Length: 304
Ligand SMILES: [Zn+2]
Image (cartoon, rainbow, N blue to C red):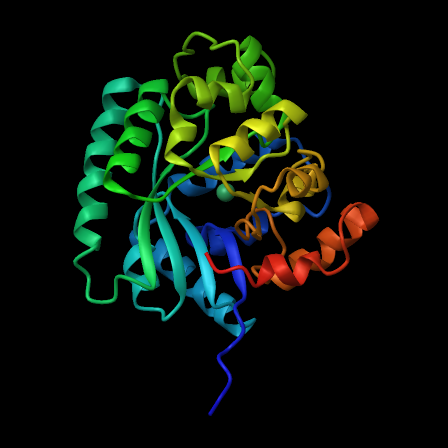
């Protein structure tokens, strides 16, 4: 009898960005400048472009032995190819928007799409969840209502959180690079919650849905405690954090607090590959002896 294949989990990708590998910086760049370039690059893409990206991403994941993936899809077009890929894990439909009415309308459509996906014959090993993109791109009511629904309907929720210093500045003071980006994009600026990322989501009741929190670099010790108390897991994407100048995640503090940690490569637009073992090699260098030597094997083989 053959031994079961080892689990190799890449817990954070955006496979639909695979064709945008030219956006991946070779040296660290300012985070919001990279986001602006990404928005511009995506503006003219067709459905065929997106499908090509997803297929290329799936191929790359399979070629390096990945068995489980956590993928975010803003177009929602990754769902079908992932359900049929033989990969396991979760694909999260992304919703965002600072305009309340538009954001909630998009949420309604996402709910229907998620429930419909459960009827797909290949649903099970690959599940479908909801992503509410990030605090700088989403109206607070989208967080409130989306998280409440996920909790009630038992749907997996994933959020990009506490990634860059710019996000903290935006939430606490409505100033800095995000203000300049939104002004450039012509998006109306909502009032500042005056809270840092983790307390902000807690104030909206979002942590009660036990979201999977991606990045989580900009955190205090007390905020790590909040995440641990809420029973949330986090995803670490070190190469993306390094290249987008977001800083080093205090991984050793999450481990000490008992927070489950996954490793993810993020998309090819901010990471040189979708190979989570290469991510682990970079992380090993970056964190050095702050974390145990055998940690990486444990993290990479944790199924999603
Ligand atoms: Zn991401």
